Length: 462
Ligand code: SF4
Ligand code: SF4
Image 1 (cartoon, protein in one colour):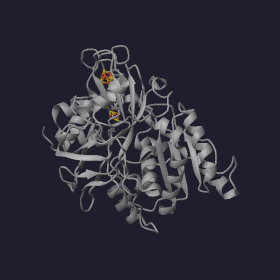
Image 2 (cartoon, rainbow, N blue to C red):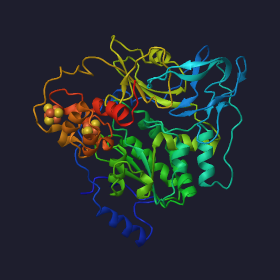
Image 3 (tube, rainbow, N blue to C red):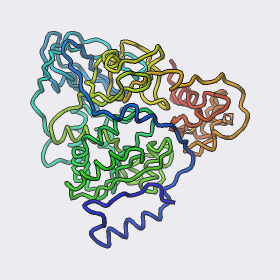
Image 4 (cartoon, helix red, strand yellow):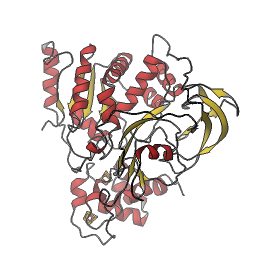
């Protein structure tokens, strides 16, 4: 059954020649269906009704992290130095993601900061904003642009994956020794509440299409497919309208409206019919996968000479003023929350309710992977019931999109049995949380798998 529906062909309703038509038809016979997943209440309308806003930074402090995962940039500014927006403030050698001032102002400290969605404090450059938002001169990539030069440029422009994990984009772009024939753009945004990608696609579709076309040209890729859940009709329309400006073959596809449709192996399956085996890279099946916000940021860097200094953050849940804000990296979470006006005294969720986490530090700042801040309330986030013994209902197995056996995995985690964890394919778990969501016994399935990956598999001890 074809689940990812091609909505149109590039430059018109019909392909220009029979070769294109036959290739589309042959794809439609591929098995693009995946089993499992769950239907969730989206709560998208809470925050997707208003255009993306910006905030005045006059009088604000921003703390720009110098570290992303294992990549640690060396600060290259001193306390008291005036900096322009986009100016390099941290740099490094091979595989290091550079850091940039997210506003103009004065460096007041080189110290630690707490990223909203991280466990550990990170080294950071603290800047007192002057409120003028004066940009540094743009910096463009070399011409002609090769894949290695593109990868290096992405690192130096501070690009990381904006869809979740924050993997350095330059490393992803460089690690493509396999021949690629497709660029897949993930616009699924399947997490409830989050609408940052939806608003980005609605409002900046032309920039996304231009960036996708350029990437396809650099890689010699013939097909670009943008996957979107069909609960974003305005985003689909905006992208379709933007496609008239490109001669590249770019298609917008409707994904199944089923969480976690944006999970990488599921997106690849839906858009290509190809199976991404656990632990394998998308390049091994001929595709490059990027989140739509990452593609947009790449476009700003390649076409406008702007490094990554901000991201769209959804403010939703129990708030008086929901919406999306383009937040400078390093802005304090309390400033963003003040703009949203949370009511009630519930916790703040960072990211979506399925894969996000509760804000642990009220002094935290926006990082490049902070997709949303959700004010929790009992009605929107009902408390989980107390944990009870497993009743062997098999629901967790039915919903697992990776065809795992969560109950058996949980048992292997509790025993800390590496052989059993390998047998039950722990590393194939994409940590989507669908199993935890449906478990009538409220067993901490996903959290146990996440913990086991770090402690038992990778040997990381808290
Ligand atoms: S968290 Fe892991 S085990 Fe649970 S449903 Fe998702 S992929 Fe399957
Ligand atoms: S869903 Fe929960 S109760 Fe049902 S089999 Fe899985 S772990 Fe057991």
